[in-house]
Amino acid sequence: METTLAAGKSSQFRQGVQAGVTIAIGYMPIALTFGLLAKTTGLTLAETIMMSAIVYAGASQYIALNLLTIGTGAFEIVLTTFILNIRHFLMSASLNEKAEPDVLWKKALYAFGITDETFSVAAMKEGTVNSPYMFGLGLTAYGSWVINSAIGYVVGASLPQSLQESMSVALYAMFIGLLVPALKKQRKTILLAGMAAVINSICTLFLHVSKGWSVVIATLVAAMIGQCFVKESEEAQNE
View (cartoon, helix red, strand yellow):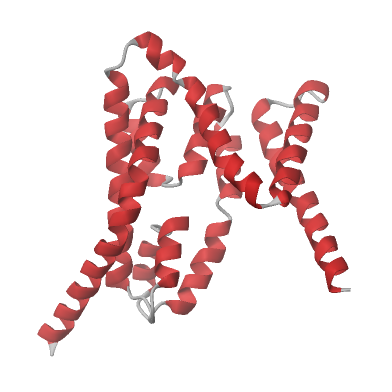
């Protein structure tokens, strides 16, 4: 009985690893770029690895690098990261409905590994998911992100200093690359991005708010206003 149970868990873990391979491959270029940009931003190798290991959130880490570049304080960076990752509460709650009963510490542990990609894979899996499967899925993706962040940093350290300094431009190119596809799909995104840019400019140029707090204020206000417009539009369509 115990042998059968152990074999079943091992099989589920392998399935999770197999499902996570495609995510791990997809993370490689993004993590490599993050490591490279972290080096040009001024982080040490240990700081880069720790950020990927503890934060483990691609968009938030890129934004954190940008905020560090403009001299933003730690509290503003943490608050901005928290706002960006609020959706993980919803993803975890949703996935909990699909997960098999298990001890709380196991669920809490693999919940740390939930990203947009691992959530999508787990949510689309037929039937329920269990701890061995989620650990296999999460560890594969997590390992790729952390390891490739370190590799990117080492590669960046070997580049000429002039090229390292010029790579800071790639950070803004990355944000544009993330934004443009969303703009093509939803007009709501255009509204949110436009409002955030206007609010950030007003806070910085006219109200003389620090750049870090300008980003936080612009994010919150634009999100609230955008949500109001969406609700009004939905109500109008229902009528």
